[in-house]
Image 1 (cartoon, rainbow, N blue to C red):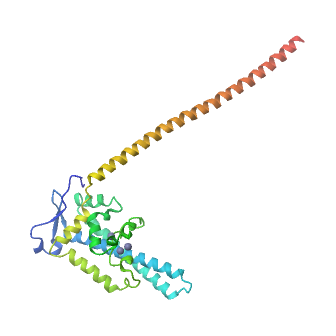
Image 2 (cartoon, rainbow, N blue to C red; image 1 turned 60 degrees about the vertical axis):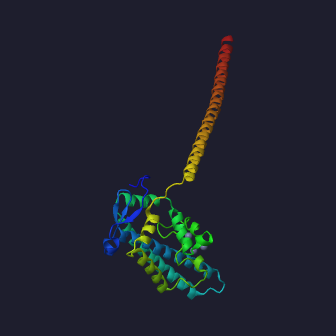
Length: 285
Ligand SMILES: [Zn+2]
Ligand SMILES: [Zn+2]
Ligand SMILES: [Zn+2]
């Protein structure tokens, strides 16, 4: 399992560039766990491709909504939207299967532990290394329009959430850019080439961002401690309040019970008295 003491990320093995693509390895962590560079590259590639399809889907949903709002509804346009949406969703499901299979190929222990620990935070990809990358590629983080942050609010998907790809509707600012299959294939191929290049620099940089759990800053640690303190304070206060409420309730119940007993006694006394007087009266007779 990944432990907080592990700080170093990935490093390429000696002779990386001379090795065949499927045999290349990166070493992870202080105990240098060997990990297939191909598997790491494929995970990063699948992540991009899934984000790409997710962003196409989001654009199509928007387009479909606009289409339905129009008074002169164009049935052909609506049908083409629906067909593309179905096709995109099917492709997403296929790619996600590929991603799941590849994730299973990660070595158990440090590497898988690090990968899973990082993803415990649903907005893990808003880490500064990937935000910087999005800015460098001219994504929404460069314009601060909030699209990347908003994607972190989507809980409907396990994969396909993250920074802008060339399919981001907001980045493109036009309505017709995303449909060309050639452009899609071209972009995804370029990324694959960079990840599986003989020069490991890009892969190491991306693998570190995709795997290495974030080190907490002193400020983050301090704010965590403060939140914990406030939470404990609230819990204690709540407990005391409950105790007081409890006491008050007991007192109230007690008062009701006393009243009930008192009423009973009075009734009994009256009954006894009645009887007594009856008897007495009878005796008198
Ligand atoms: Zn945007
Ligand atoms: Zn964007
Ligand atoms: Zn971004």
